Amino acid sequence: MKRHLLEAADLDRDDATLVLDTAAQIDQALAGREVKKLPTLRGRTVVNLFYEDSTRTRISFELAAKRLSADVINFSAKGSSVSKGESLKDTALTLEAMGADGVVVRHSASGAPHRLAHWVRGSVVNAGDGTHEHPTQALLDAYTIRQRLGRLDGVRVTIVGDVLHSRVARSNVGLLHTLGAQVTLVAPPTLLPVGVGSWPAEVGYDLDAALPKSDVVMMLRVQAERMNASFFPSAREYSRRYGLDARRMAALPDEAIVMHPGPMNRGMEIAAEVADSVRSTIVEQVANGVSTRMAVLYLLLGGSPQ
Amino acid sequence: MARSSDPARSTPPGSTPGTLLSPADVARVVDRMAHQLIERYARAGGVGDDDVDPGGGRGDGTAGLSDLVLVGIPTRGAPLARRLAARIEAFTGVAVDVGTADITLYRDDLRLRGVRALEPTVLPDGGIDDRLVVLVDDVLFSGRSVRAALDALRDLGRPRSVQLAVLVDRGHRELPIRADFVGKNVPTSRAQQVRVHLTEVDGVDEVLVTEEGNR
Image (tube, rainbow over all chains, first blue to last red; front, side):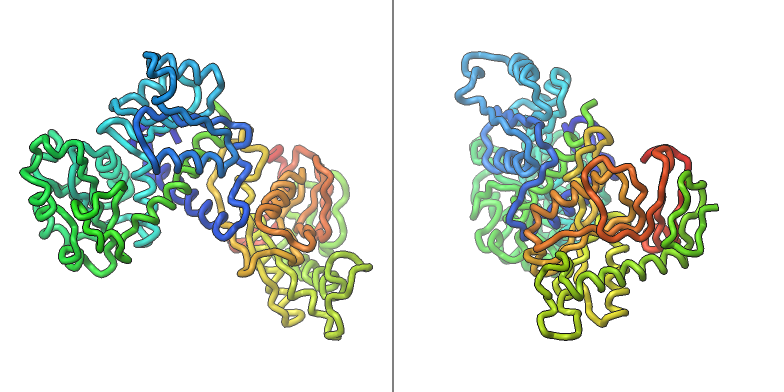
């Protein structure tokens, strides 16, 4: 494995499978245990460097590091020297001087983790950078699919919604392709990035046509902050054409599952009855996030420092 | 040749490289260990002779065996534990619980040797609380694997007692750890390597001594 996890392309098929297998073993080893803690990363320091708001990703990484007995430092841009104008590089050098073994970084600028990786000796894990990548989300999604369907090879995954702004979609397309799944993107033309034709995925505009051929439907969050940027005429129209409601869910094959990276807009891209149905893996995804991130931290930080 | 017709007899010091145990020897050694386990646990509950007889009036002397859990340390301790359980059942009719405990995340040499893939941890339903646990491994060498396994057990539950069974004890301990059940004692030099092969993992049953340097 590479020293950093910056994008889905850092993992080849063997690496990605190793992460998923490791997560599965950790899950199994910790299931039903009173002491959900392992001594593996004792004496290692993990810094959570969050320049952008996050609930589940930050908590998930924090819990993962703590369950492996690492020391965790949480840094959020608010209330730090960043508000006094400190640059990313100076913050990185400060962390370096304090001896961080791993840096988990979320930043609103695409590519910030790449820059950071040149400045620190420890391993850098991208926890979401701008509209670029979010590789651990893709890993936990792949893990959830494999857990529910028993395989990834040949699984038909349809990713629906705001692909243009979605780092989740970008990482998932890369990783799922690496793992042998067939990915289809369904979105309004205005919400597809330039050059999407070169991605290893099919592109379509008709959700109803894609659903019967999907083993997995992954709904992306409609980012309310971009709603008035005229990417689509109205919320109602978006919901009617690209929202997943009970009627559309009925068109899915029997075993198919519905995923969402959260946070959800119930009634917008996903109906409440769909989000709460047995097909929905939304709660599992959160739980699987912890074990997947434990696997990543173990594989990156557990061995000898290079 | 170090091959011995009587597996209980130790090979002389400075063992010659080669086959230490043949497939038939391995089967015989496993049978003998199964008998030793039955003797210890069926009568005295495995905690020592002064312990209360867990057979408590049942008379058939197998009551202690139902509290026994054989916990294999992957990779080869796991099939070994299953074999011992199968032999115990064949000899007494009592089905003994079996589990596996992967110790990778408890190892103290990850920084020296790097991370590796994990193997399953599976415990019997009901866990190991208040059970008589016997850890099972293929080779006892430095004792560090056993230390890691003891740490793992502490997180998995609170057994009434823990003992250790190994197929081969090759010496060179680095920690104050000893085995309670030993299939074969083999004096080795540190430069030598002892390799246990089992059908379930390697396709053949045998124990080899090679001159390849330390693991």
